[in-house]
Structures are given as structure tokens and as C-alpha cells.
Amino acid sequence: MIRHIDIQLPPFQRGFHLITELIVRRIQPLPEAGLLHVFITHTSAGLTVNENADPTVLADFEATFDEMVPEDSPWYQHTIEGPDDMPAHIKSSLVGSSVSIPIREGALFLGQWQGIYLCEFRNTPRSRSIVVTIIGENGI
Image (cartoon, rainbow, N blue to C red):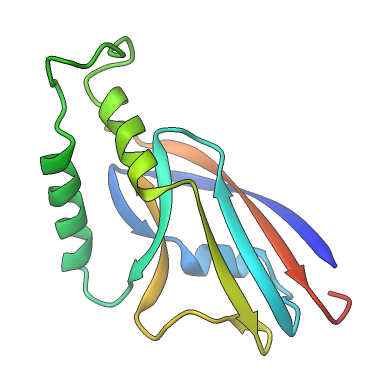
């Protein structure tokens, strides 16, 4: 069985946002066993799986990415959409556009401290679209 679910995320501020529970609410029921694949259909935001307990991780991610890929670098040529546009594209390529998570016993098989993050790299909040694909057994 393969199931696809389109999810429209609400606008999020620039930064890293846990969206695990938002996704889980929209994809029920889950099969007993399988694989969840989440893909973001944008080039200036990304997805990753990481620490879900300590909120300082969110701030550290933001600070590190801003240090690695600063705005207003003189070598950027793609600047028509503003100073955050090209850095957002680079940052989204660094984290990637999808994550895959095993499904066991009808639930996402994430580690104790893991969660799914939306990585929003644009300065202006915007709604984002994700596509969730569930591959599983037991006829769900």
C-alpha cells in the first residue's frame, strides 16, 4: 500500500520549527510497519530530523547557518527577490528537501530525542507545502 497526503503548513517565521506533531495528526492511521517519506516542494526551505527536547538547539542551528551562509555576500548574483533569497536556496540545499522515517507498531520510529523540523530560511513568513508518502503493509 502506498498513500500520498498533501499538507499545507501554516506560515512560520524564519528559523527551525518542530512539525512532527502537525504531520502525525494529518497522517493517521499509520500502517503497522512501513516507511514515511516527507518532501517539501520549495527551494528556500528544507526538512531535517534532529533534537526535539532542548529549544537552544533551534537557536544554535539558526546562528550556525547564518554564519556559514550570510546575507548580502558580494558574490551572489541571484538577488532579485531580496538579500535572503540566495542564502535561503543554499541553506535548503545543505539540509535537504526530504526526510524518511521508519514506521513500527503503527507509529513513527523516531529516536527519543528526535523530531522533524521545517527549516524556514526566508525572512518573511510564508505557507509551505509538503507531500507525505506512506509505504506500508496491513492494508492501511
